[in-house]
Image (cartoon, rainbow, N blue to C red; front, side, top):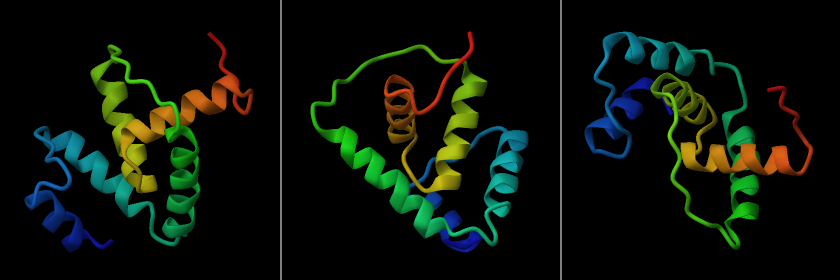
Length: 103
């Protein structure tokens, strides 16, 4: 998806607008870093992970630092998946010991 298509999707309400100019700049920079990466392959990988977690999903509500949520949404945009699916994939990888976390 090129920049024009992304802006079009934002105008159509498919992708939310960012109110803070600095945050918008960061999102565009993250988007531009994708040049040369195989976005479709990465998107397919993350979609497969998301599909695998769809069964028996449970809705939860959590409080998240606003800045962390912004960064998470930017990473989800980079990978072409909804941020909720990215959160689910992170949790799945953690509980199945595919990633570790130091607290």
